[in-house]
Length: 250
Image (cartoon, rainbow, N blue to C red; front, side, top):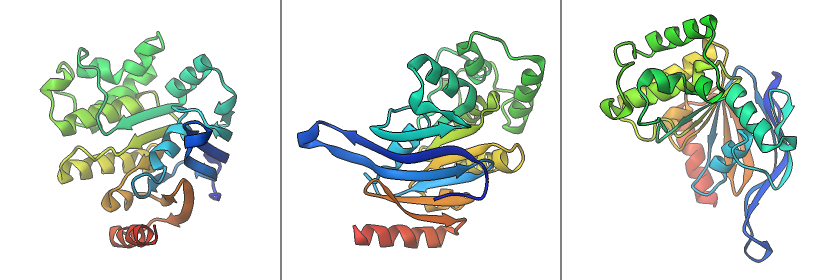
């Protein structure tokens, strides 16, 4: 399965198994797919379909059992731990349902964490970009606050600012609206949509929410560790109907 654009992520015959031979569970079963650059891709499927595993291996957070994965032209399945950590830091941004902010750091420090972990300060150009993000995300008056002083929506905005701060090739979002009320969730999705349309980022989002997936340019549907459907943008009602059909067939 391919897109018309240069792939930012390529999975080539990827499988992921857990457990030993006697109790082996196959989370991904010979998956080959290209994720297009500058696209918003949603990954959906029933519970246990392999969608989170797909995201984790595609982002280099988990090793594959077989197959190859490339991110921005670099084959990650051939990298050692140190090289993989460096690639994730430079090429990938992460947004999680649980925010994953560092409680002892203030908002400014949390946003700049990718640079701090890399042992360097942002350049003047990078600082200017971070200032723009802070303004666009409405965090200007929260920079000295710690995470516990923020609402859930504000914490997720900080996580998005951190994910975009180093201008990574890909932003990976795992249920980014799952812990938010519907209005805040819409705001977060609009920010991710803007990251694609206005800033040319590539976003890959795992979600169970048809309304969230309706923001995507493309939707991959998984079942039993395989991609069973690959669709262009769909409205939420059609996504819901597709998911119901998959669950009925399971």
